[in-house]
Length: 142
Image (cartoon, rainbow, N blue to C red; front, side):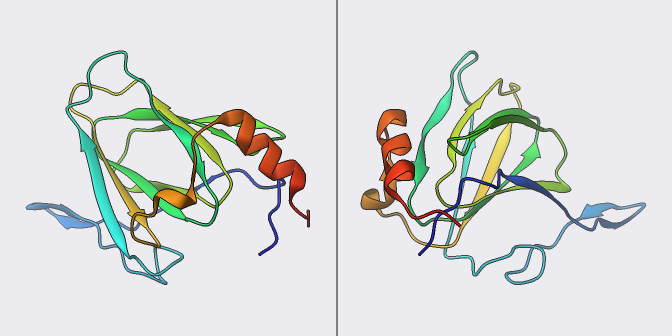
């Protein structure tokens, strides 16, 4: 696998189907989600002022969606950083491998759903920012 520092996370726009009864968004692997979904989890009832994340994944790809409320992501690829605010259920944030992420500024009603292309694997995590930068520096670049 070749790692690259060039790309940061990017937004995905989901089609909303709805009528007077309400709205519906369908997410399918290979269509709205650019990978096969192997795991889904969600974060909710986050204590005010708490920051979460503080890690990168060696191989894992994810799509994060605020299905309720809002939160912000700091995404760092080792070269540049961006802050992305998720506050609509029809927008997802694609986060590829080797992207440091931190989540913060959760609204009280935030429900953050994350779709992943693999099941939980502790060995895929990089939990130190210094180690993350070292791994990037040691990796072949595109």
